[in-house]
Image (cartoon, rainbow, N blue to C red; front, side, top):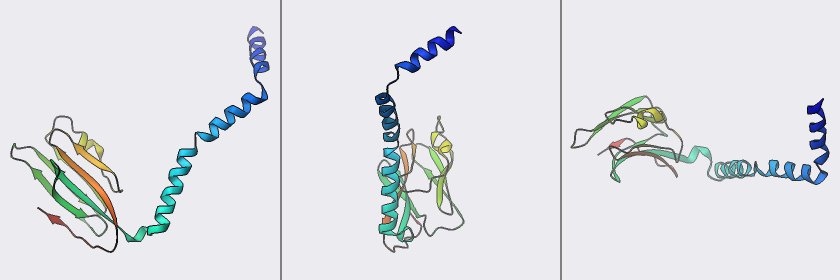
Length: 148
């Protein structure tokens, strides 16, 4: 009985203006999702999803050591990056995705990251100063697999 009296007292404290404010804030919380979804849809419509060329770049200390065109890649490819200190990262490209499958760094964050396949996604191995990033480019480049 005491709980019911206290609950009724709190309900009586709510005014119609409070309900409007709460509903408005709830609706505004979804504004970023709507904006980003609309922007992505506009980008897809303007460029056409078929004309985007996705390229994965493997960089060490800012220098590109390997790159692969993910748009045209089929099958499985392997690349192992080794530096002068004996550090290594084994990289696997499967169809339109790239991942680090093995590394001798202590934290294994790059291996745990898994596959990436969308523009802007990255895999970082800080102990080895290795960065894998996917970039999108409009056009009809076929690129191909190039290793340096």
